[in-house]
Amino acid sequence: MLFGHGVGSRGDLPLPLWMFTWAAAIALIVSFVALGVLWTKPRLAAAAGGRTIDVPGPLRLLQVVGQVAALALLLVSLWAGLAGVDDTNGNLLPVTIFVIVWVGGTLLSGLIGDVWGAINPVVTLGRGAEQLGRRVGVRSEGPAPRTGHWPAAAGLFVFLFYELAHPSGSSPRTLGIMLLVHLVVCSLAAARWGAKWLEENEPFTVMFALIGAMAPIRRAAAGRLQLSSPVAGLAAMPIITGSAAALIVVLGGTTFDGFSESELGRDVLGRPEGWGGAVTLTIGLVGSIAVIAALYAIGVQWTARVSGLEFRQIWRDFAPSLVPIVFGYAIAHYAQLLVDETQSFWFRLSDPLGRGWNLFGAADGVIDFTIISVDLIAWVQVLAILFGHIGAVIVAHDMSVSLVRLEESLRSQFAMLIVMVAYSTLGLWLLLNA
Image (cartoon, rainbow, N blue to C red; front, side):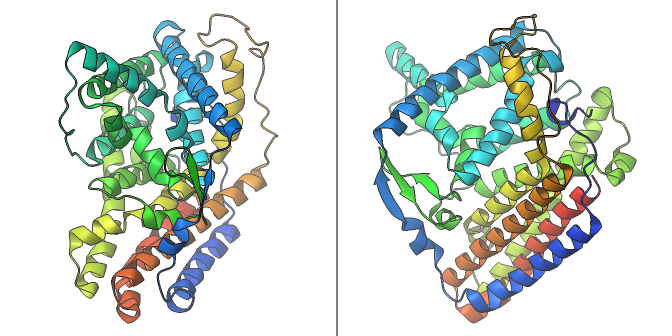
């Protein structure tokens, strides 16, 4: 049993070498074909419109139930972290944060749509704080500060620090204090600037909304849903300053997570312990994010030079191309974790504080590691990386042909293509060396 991500899971699940080789070759070939032959004009913006339908009554009721359930789970998890046993294996909070919310939210957002945005318990609390702020006179009637997605990027880095570097980041007590501080800050911000501010700045809310833009189902106007082809919504995704940074932080964190579990990572990092080890791991995390950012900057710089557009514009406008890669990386690295640890989540709901309760009769359950085979996990990993890469190339190329002529687009996307291939190859290599 390894205790990555604050929870226990299976250890070595290396990718077969032949699967790695074929996946890397397919990624490269499909990219060149898509760029040079199949995609000669922008298509995603038109496809993003899709079809708009009214939300069925039962689905609206389900949303209300989901909001109540999500808020209840948040409060119970917070209670467990602050008052329950300080044991990762016996407390509800770690598996809820690291698996159900972080991994499960990412999976649902990319496959179905921004489910988190529909039931968001932090925004639910924020609406209450906003009303309270009006009553006590602290609610600002002016516009909220326009900070872009930079607060979300900073918050995501803090979360990844707790997940990957903090010496007691899997401790329920540590996580409980972190969650309490987070909710207090969010409530104060909502009381001052309104719950809408949270939708644009709260880390999980922002990340799941960005990933949800690639799903075939998206929320449109009040009471309506928009249906379109997968990844088409990325062409209509609102991009503001800091969006690329938020995506790069998450991609860099997932990359570092995979690297730290590889043989090379263990050789380089050793077995860091305590706060001294936290410094080492934090440097590694920052370095991984910097490498991902540098690769993206190389592609942006080349595209800007060939197209004649500004670097800042390309950096911002091509951010949606990172979304499929972030989603693919997350599924490849954490799908097996989600399958295994979701089972333990149900067990811990029966005894959220680890006090020996058995509220729903499931507290004595054990994880069945045979539900999903190692071979199936390997295929899921490869396909997630592969389709994430293809989606990223399509989005980047579609954006390029919408900005410049096709001939210039093909030349401008050369470096970005190499960057996408590098991301995919890196992800596959990390899985190969798990």
